[in-house]
Image (cartoon, rainbow, N blue to C red; front, side, top):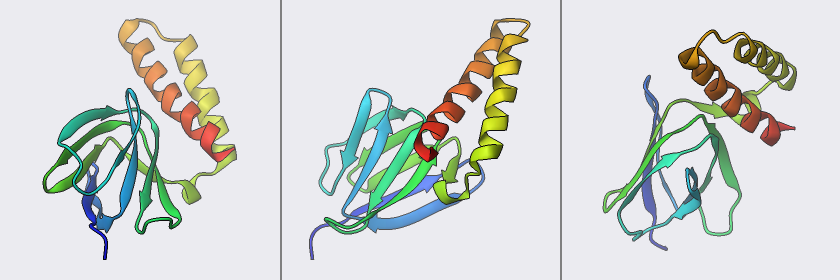
Length: 134
């Protein structure tokens, strides 16, 4: 059996996944990267995007959308600290479109830089998610 990578995906609420995989592709802030067994230690921020979990070499990937967060690869494995993770099968495209419209309205109505930045962040992850589910 080939080496396996231990990985965890943790949200502020709970441990979402604790498993072994052949490879995990992470949407890093500077581009996607693949974490594999024996990977060199590193840390990266995560942009909104899809984490792809390959339990076996050449197998199909389990896909989870993350809003953002941090990834750390250490000798023990990969830990993803996600702001929030969303199962792609659970996304309702019509509901997401309505939320995007609300976020655009909030951005237009932002009274100051803090409100504008918050609205831009919300709109960014929703737009990224909508491009994946469409």
